[in-house]
Amino acid sequence: MENPSNKWELTKKGEAIDLKLFQARFDWYLNKRTGKEEKMVFVDADDAVCVVALDKSGKVILVRQFRFGVEKDTLEAPGGLVDEGETPLEAAKRELAEETGFTGGKWTFLQTVQSNPVFMNNQIHQFLAVGVEKTTTLKLDSGENIEVELHDPEYLKKAFEEGLIRHPHTLTALLRVFDLWEKVSF
Image (cartoon, rainbow, N blue to C red; front, top):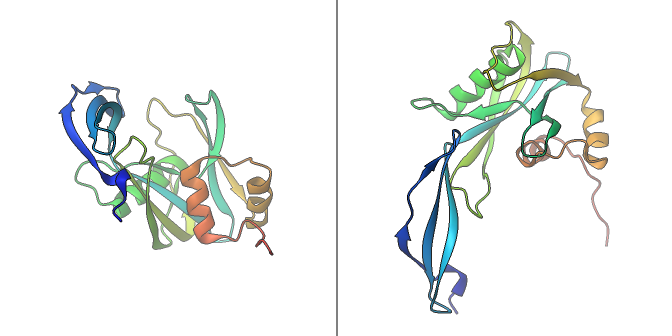
């Protein structure tokens, strides 16, 4: 039997509104299962990167910054948007340097995750950088105010368990690198 949730037909694209980081619009889709047309939110966004970085002493480099959506500081892995003409790896290296001042090291691609497939079309490319070192000063955008924090990997388990790190892109990247939760026995 076919999955009826895949039976949607785009009937009309709305006009995009420029929201600085995104283009948003309403699209109308026909649900072939019900025969009803639905107005859906669509956000067109550039791909982004997220970096789990460890310095030469094994400390994890995180950034604390104010996030307007939740109106408070969050603790997260460095990252940002992939600029036009950049590869995800180039963007990851640039973002790590700009947000933390750390460069170099050995880089490994971890995975690509969907940002929020409910209404967004972009992907987050996640990398591991091991053995980075502080070589430059921060180069923050006018909309950024970042504090760099270095933590022992053991801190991540506590931060994970206590909900101190809640950014989904950071969590999915950290879970690829560290065993942050105990396995459940049945």
